[in-house]
Length: 393
Ligand SMILES: NC(=O)NCCC(=O)O
Image (cartoon, rainbow, N blue to C red):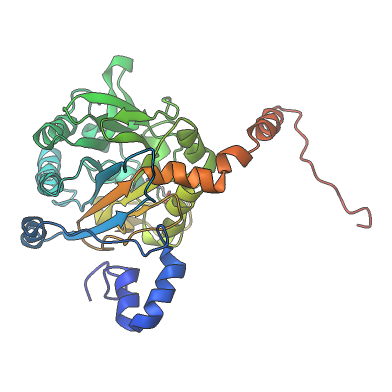
């Protein structure tokens, strides 16, 4: 059985396809994956050359096609997006520069395949240019941090953006030299001309399990920016920020049509949450969400503990990949493999965002003023929870 697979399968879809008879599978999928404009989410016919590259370069290649209803007053606004999940290439004991270069070389293969497939906006996984060493609490890993403006990984993505006229979302460990060498967890958004449009710093920093990230960086100070690109209004909610509904909501209120969630999370902690959270955010905020999770198991040279009673160990556990796209109408596409590098290519008709708003009206039934009032009270030291006690107790 392939290491890191789901009981020998690349994904839950593959497992279901093997065991559920075709007529019943259709019904099961309708309930589990939803319908997009009344139909199962489609698949793209990707170029044979693109498929061949994925085979030769040994990465998973999957696709999804999300439609919107035709409108009389607006043409369709279809954008082709790409999600890339990747393992580290060299062991974490290798020289740091060699590790970083090997990852760039590997991700470059998938970025170029995305470009060849006609992708116009691509997003990489959280801190894609390095091992996710934040479990260790060792400060040596800060050496991987780089400038969001001039860093090597950013320059590498800028070159890919120029080569393919493609927006690239490049999540890095950032070193802000202009502010006294401060370290941040940041996504740099690169325009299709290779220019830097802006950056977003991770808003919510985990303190759960081995995710000892607060040893390295603080909560971000960039708010909830939406980046207006040539291909749509996009935002980035970095990993653990997906557990915070208001974080998602603020990106939506600033006008996002597509929110990427570059992540690094492991099976034991969050696998059952993963298929729910991006999809729920897409539904609640009437925008598309693309979740990209790291893949593979990364072992570190020295043992660490996280104060949770577990014996000292050298790895986080398995990063389960399973990147996917969810649509505002509640439908979702297939997952990339749980155990392999992968590229997801998806066509999204962004008209579906406004159509869903018009149908469900969440933006008009949200009662923002009521909640603004509640939160204003909640953050005051004299806040008293509104609890009405059963007088019979
Ligand atoms: N990278 C990161 O924030 N991971 C936290 C774990 C999780 O949110 O599943």
